Length: 108
Image 1 (cartoon, one colour):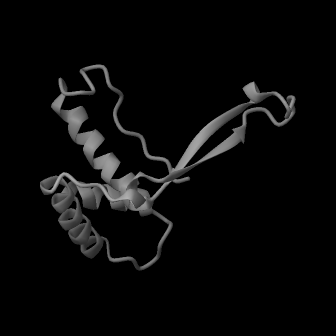
Image 2 (cartoon, rainbow, N blue to C red):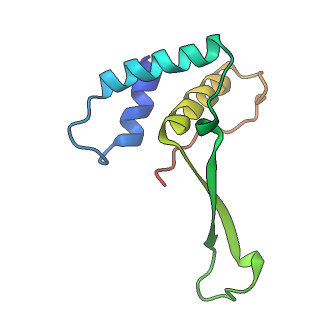
């Protein structure tokens, strides 16, 4: 639960005044444990929006190579992914391997 609380604090820093991080971490920890026990991920956790972003605004806006895609996902899903990736990174040799980069946080 402490790792979930840490990621919530990092991710919510400056975004929400007065949120109860400990209560939120407790509920998320319970939810994530249930998802792991039952090997289930809700459909809403797997849905996302892919949005194109212009790389160079001065460039040709009709050129498809002038865009990069970002994925907007559910906040709970993002915190869950950060917990899983950081755990796998610490383990070293798992599916990510020894050369996997540490998890990065994006507040988009």
